[in-house]
Length: 96
Image (cartoon, rainbow, N blue to C red; front, side):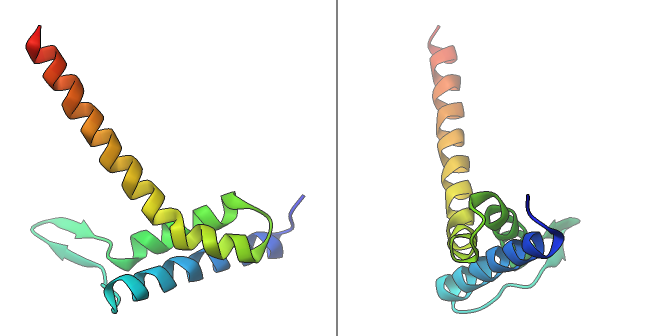
């Protein structure tokens, strides 16, 4: 069983992985902002996902870092595939 320090360490390394990915991808960090009544998380959304991915992947800081680095990409692919499936289901219902 993991102690509190171990859990915080995994969350930290996952966050660092997500932060590294954001910097390498955009060559900058996008700060959160509010526009037209909607809150855009910017890099904070990726950091939250990275922290959770780092905790869930394994009990090793290196794999937690890699989980944070790739965590947002995995979720983005799941969202895109889910949208494609939803569109496909709408088309099949429209054919009937």
